[in-house]
Image (cartoon, rainbow, N blue to C red; front, side):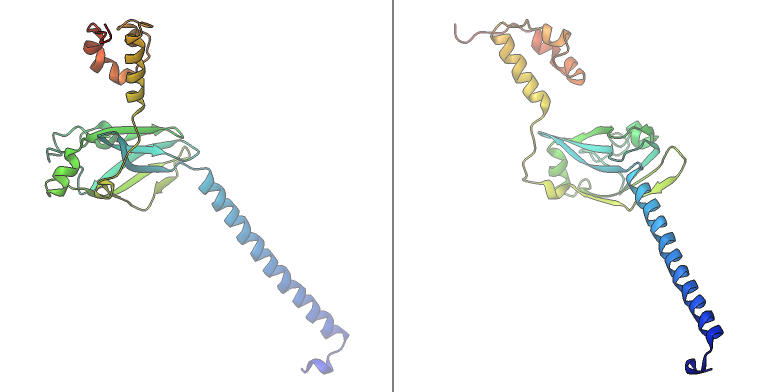
Length: 220
């Protein structure tokens, strides 16, 4: 029927149909917006585990960090090719055998970072000689507190890109220099820096013997 011959009933029906179509489109848009908002919320309130190289002067480490806003559970990290240290033996090297890689991490709180030492400058030296890999494809899988599983896209780490670059100083280096100055100025005894915890715990045992030695005053 041509619209020109429509009566009031036909026009009323056409108007009702148009209103229904508009409402349907509006409902579909609202539903899509709700889904997008829900997806955005999940992206903002979720764990997010990343793996990267970390540097402390000449020490090269593997860093695993949860940069998300909620805890990550059952974190599993896989390296391709298998992680190898300077000696080129992934069975003997402590990084490859570290529990966080071998058995996984049961839980990582938001902002938590864990590191395992890979080696020193010999990592780059042996890597450039082709004895150990410098490039890794790393995959991290984990779940949130609700059991939702995350399998993020692989991370590509290339240690060779850091060759001939500068790194920040280790905080322990500044701490040691401060302790050395304090001992020399006789403001603290050689053992107080260890006993009072002025030096971070992982380094106390390594410097205890040196700290116990008498300090020679070169000015006298």
